[in-house]
Image: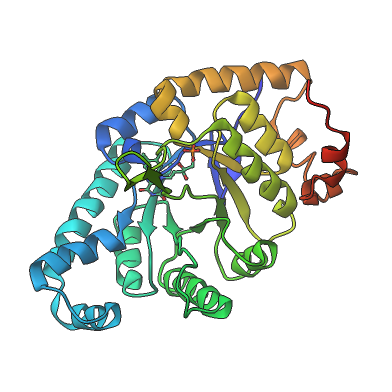
Length: 330
Ligand SMILES: Cc1cc2nc3c(=O)[nH]c(=O)nc-3n(C[C@H](O)[C@H](O)[C@H](O)COP(=O)(O)O)c2cc1C
């Protein structure tokens, strides 16, 4: 018998596989189905700051600048937001009543504005933890790396200082110095770094000559970036790592645990293979563990992380020079 339980953000969960935030975690019925199929925890579909602001724009008319809008909202607007937040808080309350697994709420931030109050309400509604999804595309020509980093720090500070539940911080890989930023974030009171969020990628249709978008769901190849950074940072930063991105099968989960992740989040593969697929993942992980005589996850977690393997340089290699030279097309 193998034991798949693990600790994440100070909470014991029965499986390292967490249902990541997506449309599959936005309704009570699907949350119950995820629990029935054995996920260790669920991250609720995010409540989007943008979404709330858009709603404001429709009702309040456009304002000169983003900042003035935020200031305006500070004074005048709580009703519309209350409705959105109200529905979200209700979902947390209902989920807490019906489910036994931990409920991780999720807030998608684009600024350091206002989330303090929301974060507090989310905690009071009973969420076991809060995941902040702060994906800021560094596309503003006027914003320096320091400006961007400061914004991330402010968001973390505001949320962490206002709640007493564990906070996870979900990031993209778009950092000038990812390892250094991850270390700093990990020392600012968060309990986990979730790496990585999936970016919406615009594409171009050459026949319609219009902007379109690329696949919503991830591809198994996306795992490799998640794997590299999990291995580089595991046990070297001051918080847990929840690996997310390209996890398509049991082997992906095992790889990320070997690289040192505390938990692994899945979204696309649940859309592709259905929620029952979690059972298959568990069975296959169990078979792999038995084959290597592991009875619990701690026996192999991080075995191939940067600071435990003799081959750490493999994770840092980015140039293909040697391989290009040796590569022979078959
Ligand atoms: C349809 C869909 C909806 C998503 N919605 C959210 C969301 O609301 N908030 C969030 O933080 N991440 C969201 N994500 C990102 C996932 O939580 C996950 O981080 C990402 O898809 C990478 O994991 P995957 O390769 O298993 O899909 C969404 C992903 C998908 C595919």
